[in-house]
Image (tube, rainbow, N blue to C red; front, side, top):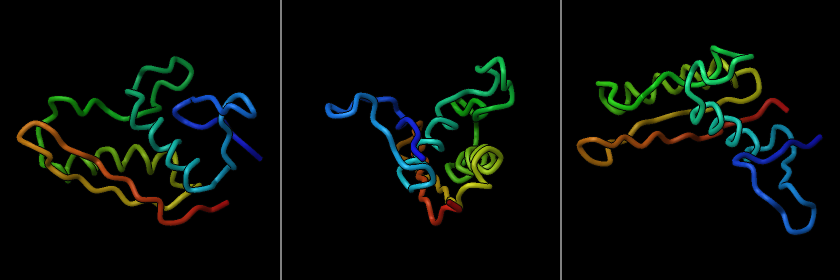
Length: 104
């Protein structure tokens, strides 16, 4: 079974780019969608997404933990992931996601 790739993009052969469900790239796209969507943005699923991380105080690993909780809530049954946070500079934190295994 296939799903649209996230972010949505076009494939010159088939139209929209598609990925096999539960493949690492598809799981990473789902995780990116969770991280890109602020909580409350989708009316039909008001709890979906990640709490606002901009201007949130905390160490990089603390911010990664908040993001990890959102990933675990919405993606955990499908995949085992590991998140880490790295300080890029005084105001920027990079959150890294690694898909360790999928349950598909």
